[in-house]
Length: 236
Image 1 (cartoon, one colour):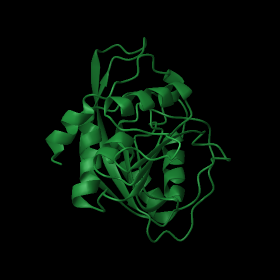
Image 2: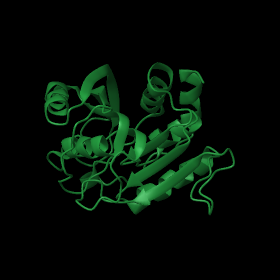
Image 3: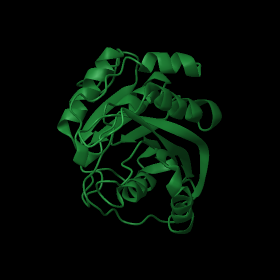
């Protein structure tokens, strides 16, 4: 599927109606979601037949993009029950079934949803349980260090690669941490613009462009992973 075709499909995904500021819930656009998923599928590992975890799934748009491109299984994880409800509704909008008794959709792909504290010490996700982790995590504006803790969790869960959006201003810091502390090969694949519309009362502008990096962490040769820590958080 071409990038424009994927973006067109994802425009059917509904954003948050009442986002939670403490969870930094901002909707990922169809444009950014399409770029992330298409990059994985066309330029790197590919998504056909892959297992994927979408951390802090929010509206579900990243996980659903992976479903559209043929992932064998996608697990959408979020701490917010309302976000998971929205993600399920969006899956229905795209004609993607999930959480059936046999856990399998009509097209043979598995789509599941899990409510969990991604930054909690008891996160019920196994190390190396999925090929790929894809996410648009908190920037750490409300919960300091949440961006790092999300990445740490993702590195534990993935066995091939992590794809994640972060403020460009944190690029050098995050790449150094991933390389030195977690043993990953990390790089910024692209610098993109996150169009942040006026979402909360304290936002003064109708929209703001934030420079973000699409980071890729190759975790295939990670020697070890630090334990999870931090507080609850999610975004989108």
